[in-house]
Image 1 (cartoon, helix red, strand yellow):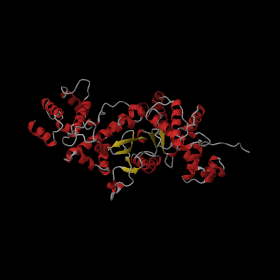
Image 2: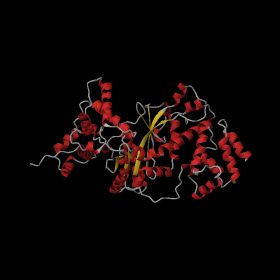
Image 3: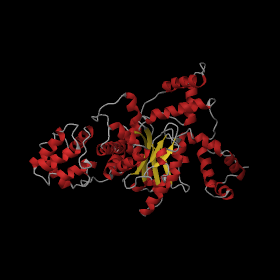
Image 4: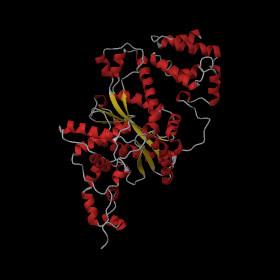
Length: 484
């Protein structure tokens, strides 16, 4: 009689996934050497196995061979989710902090004042969830090389590497320093409608997956009689407008996988890709996030280090928010409505179009630069002098930028690049509610020094910088067309 063999949770789920994908039990049993009776037992326990993986995010936890739950399952899950939230924000936590927080949660959940989080409890908790101590500096320095090895082993090119991340957006909130008359607190609070966005893009920035927005309402009134498939952004809902495990899983299989497969087919590449994720509690374990053929899968970034290596968090999302605020202010100026009246007009449907335009304007240059900020060792590339350093300068050659820098040297402060200076002026426009001829990029094209003498360009930009916040667009146009 052959010696009995034990299998890990991960091995069991891989076998179950093969059967669920259409392979017969007879074939799987023959290939793996596992008796059919054992396979039937695993299929029967599939729900228990998958439920167990919901509270495990690391390979150490998935390597367990038993799925014995904690005595207090609710406390166990609450503490685990709290740890994941702290780690995703880069907050260092120690064993004593975890034990103290567990005792606090126990009192809140059960009113239990006798529970003591001992060192033994902490050891079993860590072992159950596969949690270990990893320093941020170690993860920062080692992960790019680990990712490089993974990409080489999987034979993936840049087009096949993606990142996804969530952000919260108060879609009716103007820039904080916008010079508008402040309303009463109870009135302004109504404009801070919060939603969650999920963005995803590949490393070259050639494929931006259709964004997902999560709100609180199941069927917002503004979407009545609207074909949601035609909208530029997908929509889902949860109680607090937060990401949940079910929403993320549905997005991965119904939106991300088909979109990536279509993009790779259009590029003539194998339909094979990897998605890099942070350790958010709402993200299911990696083993539960892979296409049926296993060619599109997820790899998690190291805990405590996502803030320094995750591309979307290193400038892509910030750029999106900056452009969105600009579009919001532009709409306010062009509407000729009072601030409160205009903000009340912005519903989810209107916001979708604003956000879609902002996401489209995030350039491939910006995306590539942010990928290389934290993961440059995973993507060794030759420096490209032709790459423009800022979204504002997209569309201009290196020679034009150099010429403009030279002609405007009297305006630009020392140690400040042209792109930084233009971004500063754009911020001033946003703060004073001035939008000229649609956007700053259009203004720059209109008054770029190649078309105007230095003194004239200087007078134009000086006028822009000194205009009071009450100046209207027609008045600005009058200055441009009559005074210059």
